[in-house]
Image (cartoon, rainbow, N blue to C red; front, side, top):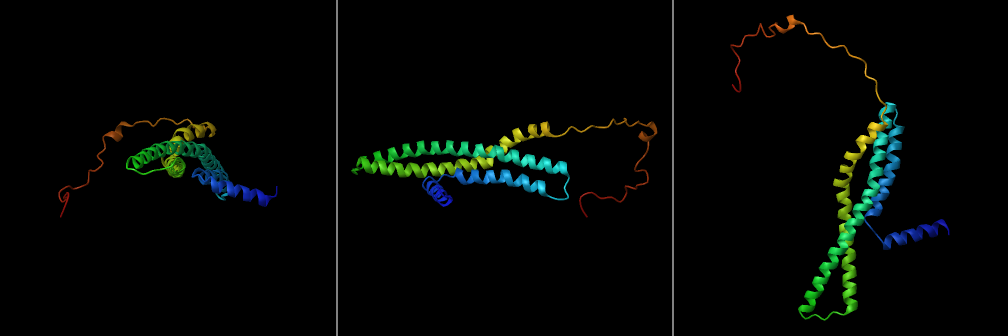
Length: 186
């Protein structure tokens, strides 16, 4: 199979089975590769802070990819269920009002509406993942991972500051006259 045939076949498959999770996962995968790479290529930055930022960006996108997939698929299944039930009610109502609908027409109506409902809720699921789920997971997961990977800094021993008794009895504002001060206005 030539490259041209492979691309054509892939585009046809993606076009007929279009899901909201495909472009989002592709973007997250590209970000997972490109963002850490670009961060590491910055000149003039501290090498430790570059490594920290690149690792953090990579972990975030590593968390994002399966989260987009899971939330999108879950929302799609929910959309399929909700739309299926709604179409059953709508068809029953149409039949109750006297419309004669064949089994094939019912099937076509239900399939088209289920596909639309599934796609719509899948998009909402992906947006929910981006706005709520991924930030929450990153807040929980990134900090412990970064603590484990960060080098431990040695803290030098600090001598406690001695307290001198003559400093406690000084008058700090001894030469200030309070006679002309006004508070809160003209």
